[in-house]
Image (cartoon, rainbow, N blue to C red; front, side, top):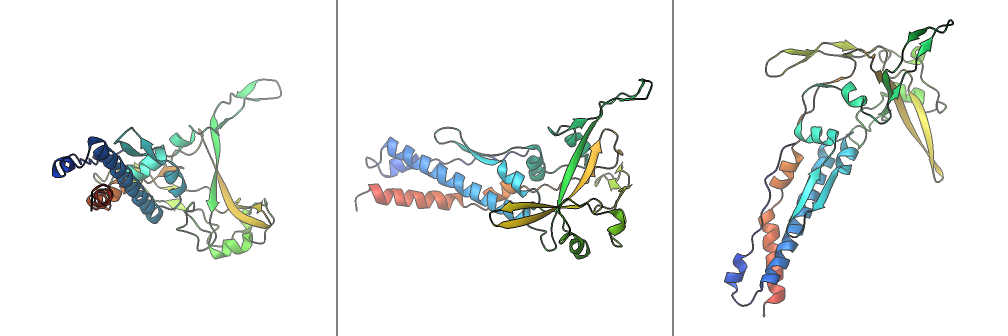
Length: 275
């Protein structure tokens, strides 16, 4: 992840300007105040930028954005987690299966035997069922959603019984046609990285409605599922790559550190110096 140069705040010059009127302890207290104010300002700007630019990745990104107290005069804003760091610094095209197989929810196939007791499949291959939350029409842009159902699919699902999967025969044209992912090339060299891939089924096949009660209201959510595993098509889960957001750099650039320190200093001097 890209490293942002530290912001240094040096107020020792105040002592010489107000000789005999300001102590070392007061300078230290003012410095600590300024460090806290600047840290919080950068964090708030970073958070605001994330809310403006991110959608489905926003909840995990903000969950992994934290202020760390490194001691007196030292605060640090850190972003952790594989996906948040990829969003921040960017990532070349990659195989999502390499991420999936590290999930704590991964399961493994079991051995299969024929009627004579001979093993015909030794098992042990990993697999993972991945839920995809489908938004209702008009919801794209809100946190947690990357996709929204077309109105025709939503009309089929909104009055549907909970946990009743949408079948292939029910999906109207053109949404019953499996989607394709175009081939992926290296942007600089033009080299083919991953070939074109066509899904085995419509992304809406198997879509279900889930219901959860919150007080006196019932909330509907809609999910589809895909199975990834050791035996998946090698091209089935290729991500096209992630453009670097550089939100940390933007947050620092859009925070007026000098103005924050200046305001805090004037307020400090007004409180301790005689009128």
